[in-house]
Length: 156
Image (cartoon, rainbow, N blue to C red):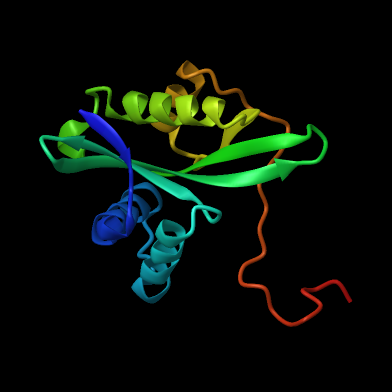
């Protein structure tokens, strides 16, 4: 198994994996008119994020994405793990761990101070996996407002 950073040539594969991930983990069908250009933008601009692919005999079998958060409180970068997907027939074979360890090594070489992720509330298998990998629950809960509507975004 090899891990490599995805390129623009991997657009179709990353889009496919993101679609499968959303369907499987959240029962969501992603809007391809938003997903495809969103993935293309990340693949074209590392400032937006990175994708890494796991390959076996030249076949993409899994992926993991990374986005960034600057912490003024800690004077450093956190990397957020995103878009984790492994083809079902390759699960429980260490694919996730190999991609994860690769990304952590890249982050360490880049001076990143910490890793973060969010996980679906009811995904007990993912909870166990991340806890086993050394992640801890924080006191934070993620909230969002999407899409933003109007110039005041509800702050009037």
